[in-house]
Amino acid sequence: MMIRLFASLLATLFVLAPVAVQAQSQTQAQAPAFSSSRIIVETRGRGPDIIFIPGLGSTGSAWRSTADRLDNRYRVHLVTLRGFGETQIGDNVSGGLAGPAASEIERYIREQRIDRPAVIGHSLGGQIALRVAADMGDRIGRVMVVDSSPFFPSLIDARTTSDQVEPLARLGYQALLLFGDQALKSQVAAFGVDMGLAGDMVFEGLGLQGGDRRVLAQGLYEALTVDLRPRLSEITAPVTVVYGWTRDPDAPRNRLEGLYRYGFEGLPRTARFERIEGAEHQVMMQQPQRFLAAVQRFLS
Image (cartoon, rainbow, N blue to C red):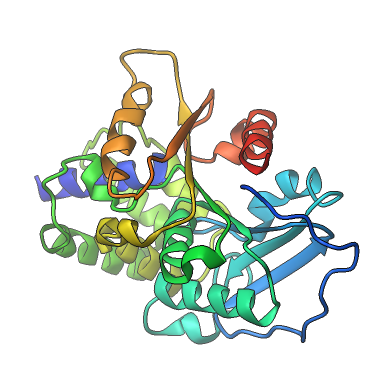
């Protein structure tokens, strides 16, 4: 039973797993070079600022196809958490992951003198975007979360608490740290668990670009246990929630909006929900044109 519940939590995480922007002058404000032991930021283009934060096991390149269509009118900032992909792990070797990453993104915004950026985050990156918006208040212009939730286990049962999930999350942390995502996938399959909505995408999310097992395991643990719903009331920026959707009434993704509406109901203003038909968890990769159109509406 524990293995089945754990698999269900994983499935929800990874398959479930900007902005009134102000006009800026032709010349972007010059700021000192930014260095961080926890994140890497690639910046290009000129114009109003958009900060992209990837999900678990992804680097900033997950956003590249979207950024390529925007950097002629916007200044895009592609964030990578150290330890994802082939990047050096840096200080992410120990301690938390999402909290320190959010703090470093906030420091980046301050030091680079970025005025009310739009922040777009996918999955775990969506949770980081919510942290940044809660911490910085009106310093953030607008937020888009892509296939993300302030507390992933609530998409299974709204009564679930972090304390209840923690033993299962710790099991996942240890299994991923010791054996890696592919071995974890095989272990779950050996028990005959139906991953349902997630299927292989649960583990493709972890292994999409891969990374250091220590960072992947910590990210998985935090995404399953951190409940950001109490902080939603601190977010003053408008929030848009984008998610993959299907017309099939029997598919779980057909019913996602109701679950998301409940999860985000603590926001001071009602979030805007936008579904992307034909996409699952990796929305921006699976339906790039439809996702780009959603981003353009978000920015307009």
